[in-house]
Image (spheres, one colour):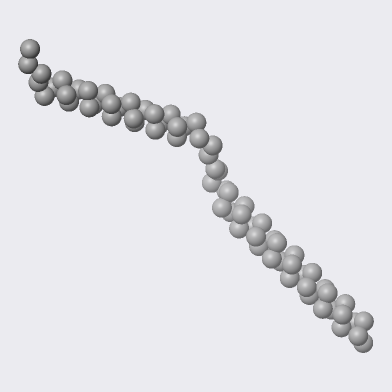
Length: 68
């Protein structure tokens, strides 16, 4: 019995398809981030910086008021 190239090609094709389906399954079951996560992160960072700046500004203003 002669082993032909078609038999080897089919086994490589099947192994490749198994790998593709495994990767597809992993991608579909992985947790996904939504499109707004980057915007939300930027907005929270901006709010944090503004609140910090406001607190520093109020601290300086109160210090100047107390110092006369």
